[in-house]
Figure 1: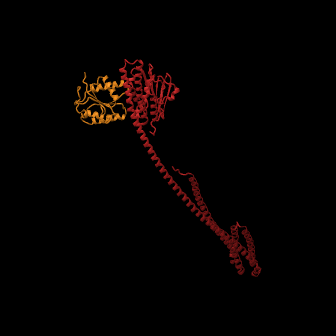
Figure 2: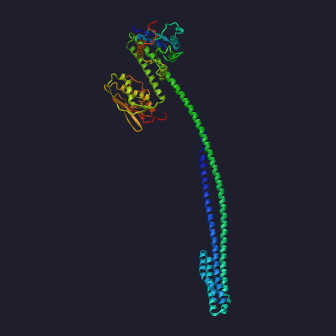
Figure 3: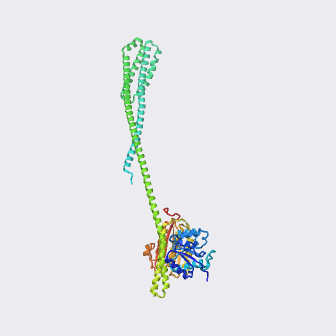
Length: 151
Length: 475
């Protein structure tokens, strides 16, 4: 059984959360998924502050980040992470509906590791998440400091 | 907005032209008059001279006669032939001098008459003198004196003198008349010249007035034009700002559509799928079909959203010009579609295409649509044939893509490039009906045209043209 590493899913839409979980479950990747409902919560989690003050140390293997989020939006979270030497090694995958070039350009400019557009069809979505999850959470060697086993 | 009156200008044009012509005419007239005037003076000088010539000639004739008489007298007194010299000289000269006098007065009949009379008298005088001299020589002084005492010679001399005097008077009289005429004429011409001068001054003043009026009008016109220009410029600025704002709004709108519409579509599709999975046992065939329809509809809606966004963007974004290698573009598009081509038997005949000037990503879209269509509509053929070629021209190059697919009915060819127009049923061939509309929009922006030919069940050819070298400047 491969080591399952933690995934941080930053998504504000309840339906999208449910669908993503369903897709991850289908790929048996759902064990270690933490959900943040907005940018602020995401940063709180990563910086171990606020409600996440007492969580165990270690970074997630990958952050699945949506663009449109309340309070602090996706690009701001990305900017914060990638400009922080402590955080910038965490792999961030943009997982969003937008295929607009401006978003692509900005995200890559800030230093996103991957940009995946959520397909409308669910089957395609499952397949995409499968490949995503498989790569980032299983095959890819995360930077040292990631949680190696379930909490 | 004010407009400059043109009617009054035409009138002033005429007036100005006339005053200039008038001035020129006056100057010419003055010149001619001056010329005539000087000519008169020259003529007059000639006349004066002529008069004195005549008078002089008359005196000469008289002096010749006197000389002859003096000679005769001398000989009569002395009997010495030496004293006859003046006689001979006089007689010799008389004929010539009378001839001269005659010639000088040839144009005056009255004078000619007098000359003839004088000539006659002189002739008589000559015989008288000659006769007297002969008598002296032959018969001696007393006889000769007797002839002299008859006074015939004296009378003749008087007559000659008086006739010559008459001629002189006549000439003087003529001269005076002519001189008076000349004076009068000179005064008249002077008056005319002064008037011409004044009129000319007047016309010049008038012309100057017109010129200054014109300049004034011109300056006014220029000021108006400048004002109008400024007004137009500010309007253009306003409109441009408005357009830019509208564009920005559209941009924001598309972004929102792109992002926010897709999410619910995704949810529809996703939960339908989950529903299907969860209730496969509970749903009958129809139920399953319903769920499947929900999913495919959501998918279709998603495609529509994508296509609409592309269509909108193609109309708004700037054309980025560069030289495009179309053959390479086609190769890239084909390799992108490799997955769709996997099971298919397609023969490709692609000619070497001339280079094109245009936006590379837009041209890519054109070929994605056209090649995608050809692949799609030949899907029922066992062996599909897709040709891509060009017909180069002087002003524009024509490109075509031909397939042996399902074709279309030429009666509906006008609808082919319409937005959301489809000529086939969606269950036969899927699609949003925007592909060719996109193609047309892009080609038109590049300054070209699109058209197509087709035959049901035989195939279709889509043509488009691109201008050679130059894109329309308005881009």
